[in-house]
Length: 182
Image (cartoon, rainbow, N blue to C red):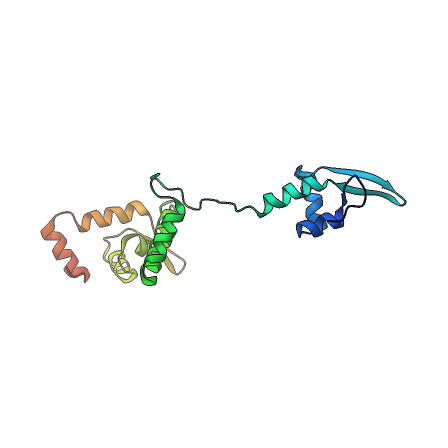
């Protein structure tokens, strides 16, 4: 790095040294990561940075940063170990795990809703939309017609499911009538 004088480095040289823009250098100074002294020049003033601080900041920026993506419950396995174990799995299994994670996120979001449409009710219960429509038509599942679709409250869906599996004999008969095979 070329020093202008005994005091330090100008903003452009500092930016080149750190391989960042001059705006980023200004932001580092605002954040307090670099100290700046403004020297008077012919048409105003010029920012002056200390070479030692620039060197320290460069080392800080180049050092690797480890940020945990997953909060593990057990201290035995680190995040990197978990990701390494994923690389040994077949790609199909990794995709299954990712899909299961996405589905669980959808279920969490579903349980926070007060009313579900039939597609959401089907995701939550595993029943098809057709099955749910048949249950609504038969009067077994309470629902309300809103526009062109049906809206179901989660507690009504829970009651319907409990009614389906109340006792084993009637559950088998109801399932046969509803088209579910054991």
